[in-house]
Image 1: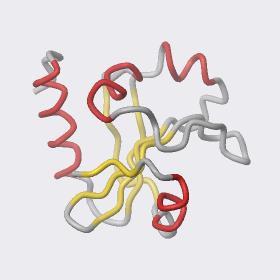
Image 2 (image 1 turned 60 degrees about the vertical axis):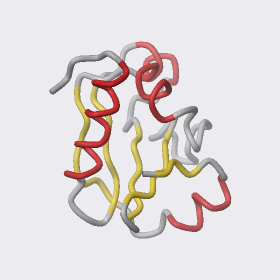
Image 3 (image 1 turned 90 degrees about the vertical axis):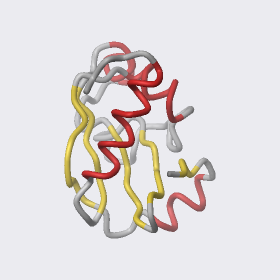
Image 4 (image 1 turned 135 degrees about the vertical axis):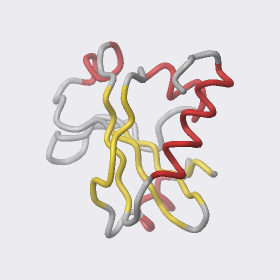
Length: 109
């Protein structure tokens, strides 16, 4: 699993992704602890996304993002359900995220 940090690279691979799942009971600071800072840390043009991680896993591109919070402070301090974008089922990504969270010290599975 690789988190894409370069924004130009991220924009180049994002085409064709859509919501394929969710991660629940996870806070922003926990995602930062396991994935690093978000790839995209500015509000999207339509205001529906405040932060987004772009991830490559086994040749597939996925995103983890807030959806329609319209409030970066809420996203960073209260949000616990994150959307997963991609073009295939996110099961392997979900498993990797939950494993990383367990290693971080958050008991999720």
